[in-house]
Image 1: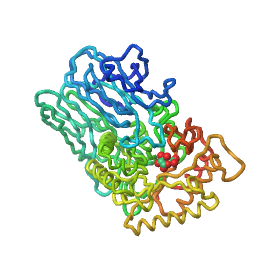
Image 2: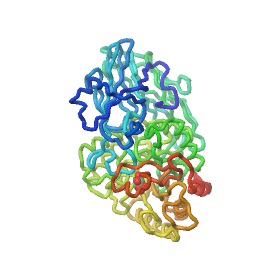
Image 3: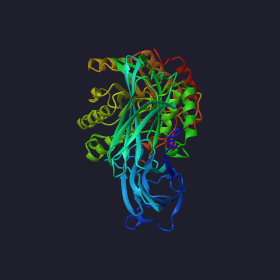
Image 4: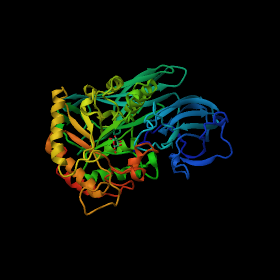
Length: 574
Ligand code: ADA
């Protein structure tokens, strides 16, 4: 499922989910063996969407895999083959010929096939989810498992001559009132002639604007509408008002859902529709122990309900573009979302690598274009814990920040720094964010953690302001590992649920008491599988990152209840 609502009334689409053939190719011999033209008879079957690591014996497999299937079309028609996400570098072949390729495991991509002939077709997909130390997103040294596979849906869309490819909704504000809503539809003309058509916009089923436009042959035209008599109710965490926007032409239509809210930062404060907010958030991997990245909508909804019950108002989608279903639920439930790309502890040498630069910038672009209309997203995150104290970091992150601004000026920009006072990239952001693990990766005793942290946070705030960073300051990560079920009568025993509870309580209380920060995200919502052996996994019992408030099956740990109590005393709005 791509979204939580109907995508179109008129568009035809053939669903290519279901049984596919699969062949593992650990030695990378598939090309030589002609797999692009069809597999060998020893193929197994796999259900798409899914991650291949749940096949017996493939739990650790990272490498090349070939997928194939046949499909039949009834007529010769312009077609677009859409992959909603594939984990790994993907090369796609149709009827034995290469259609194209895509790098980036978390965003959707597609291939246009004008006039695809009627009949039987063979679709072959090569996927390689190998990670390395130089140019992959993430690198091999990482703290989550990079599952492999075609893990979101695949479909073949069909168009007669025009396709409404995307809708972008922008707001012009008069203070905190909506002055004008601008709807832009990106329309492709697939035919060999220019096409004039009438376009209309409906909001919640009511026709609010229409216009005539000619789109040249092969062009991706922009059709713009101003909805001047439309005064929507605003979206916020308490009243997440949403509107269905539909753009139609004679042969196609597309729905998008959005909400209207203004996000700003004013000096130290983060404002939502003019009201100062305090972020009480969790970091969440979009991951499940039985499904990996293919975690399905009912399980996503359950996570959202747990996070609501906890009393959090924000989620950081660590560390990659999330499933649009997650974002749809956040829109519906009024969560404030931080979305980022999978830069994770990239060292300076990697940040200077041109291939990595190209991959990162494209991923950011694909994420912003795909998720532009979600009101829940308030922050675009450039990176996590990469070398933002290096000239290479400054160069690349400046380019990425500029890319973000060229695509979207309606949201805040940030990143999660691990460089502290050595960071040289804070000028690029609206919100300064630090990850810190007091009481976990150092030997600070729990006893005086709170008092020391209050002082440290006040000191950091002072240092930021002395260095010209009069901006919101948010702690993006802190936490402690707790093995589910491990409890003790003693105080201060690491890996127990008691220790995690005491540490989280102390840190949250210190954050609130210090008054130095505008919010925080706990690391992390739930336990999750870590990467194959590197020196990270040595410190990860069960090969899991055990810092979840709930375990991987979403069973609450002691800390869950304690944090829920603490959250009750922290209002969202000041
Ligand atoms: C980092 C990182 C997280 C996680 C965490 C931890 O800050 O951003 O992904 O690895 O540390 O558990 O140590």
